[in-house]
Length: 113
Length: 117
Image (cartoon, rainbow over all chains, first blue to last red; front, side, top):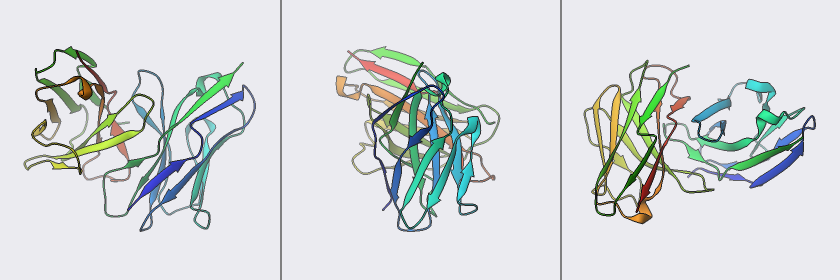
């Protein structure tokens, strides 16, 4: 069975400082991993995805994530936070052979001016 | 990118009534759509997989007679909450992968907030 653990329910950073949102996964097979962002009253938007290619994945808006199999982690980072990054972020896993996604509990990112 | 719409965006209904939520893929065909439920400050929970031309597949613990799913066409899936109760109040989100394309990426609708009074 697959599962995702987002280690922080809430992260607060100052504008211009780095962002780190942590995610650990559990999967029986080789997983596909994703980060989605949800802004208030907006649909979920895909930030980036890992599908067994390069372990360092670059996404939109300056975000990137590194797949570390030995640590079963897929942490999301950004060098410099922007006010518009404030949102809810979900780490998501999809096992090989399944089309449905399993979501983590979400991390709310707050960016202080 | 591909667009998925949901209608209505918000609905308030009285306890005991039924509510239908539509999910449409606007610029692509979707043989499969997924319905999720999101509680306040909680993650998305997969409720069921909607399959065009066949019965939906429900996740464990989801009542299929309460949450009726119909995948009427390659661009439309509907979720009907029957005999709604206040505990059914939630945010319902659908998603669809591009048919024939990579199944790794799904496109999400903006969600429907249901409030049962």
